[in-house]
Structure formats: C-alpha cells, structure tokens
Length: 89
Image (cartoon, rainbow, N blue to C red):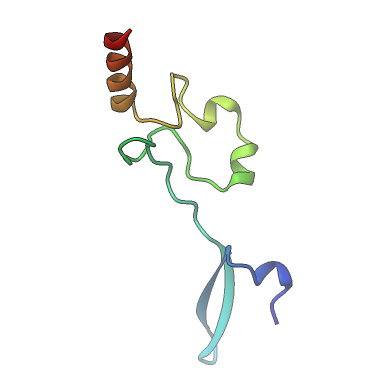
C-alpha cells in the first residue's frame, strides 16, 4: 500500500516494467500547467511553470516579469489596455 501522502490526486501514478516482467508503481508529482494571460489566454513568457512550493522559494524577480501586470497579462493585452485607458481618460 502506498503511504497516505501518495494517495492524493496531486500524485501522478506511472507504471514501470521491472526485471522479471513485473509492473511496479512509481509515484511522481504532476507537472504544473503554464501560466496564461487573463485576457486572451496566451502563454506567459518569463513565468516559470513550477508548483507553488517551488515558486515560493524563488526570488521575486524570478517569479514574474517586472512590468505592469507582469505574470497576469501578456504584453499585447497590457498595451491594448493602456491605450484604451489613455483614450478614455
């Protein structure tokens, strides 16, 4: 039986072939999905696709780009939004 920490949905189960043609269960952590733009859904560059614990160990500048709405919106959407805000001001 696997330990309780491996019985969660966040653990990915992979079956491997062992010598003697046995199937052995290996348990891995699932990969985090890539960050996406909140407006258009495009993949965000400069944002690592790591699990929450691993991201918290990075420095602030490694977590997201240093610009307005960095890590939430892509540059194209930020540019569009700024143009719209400037025109409506």
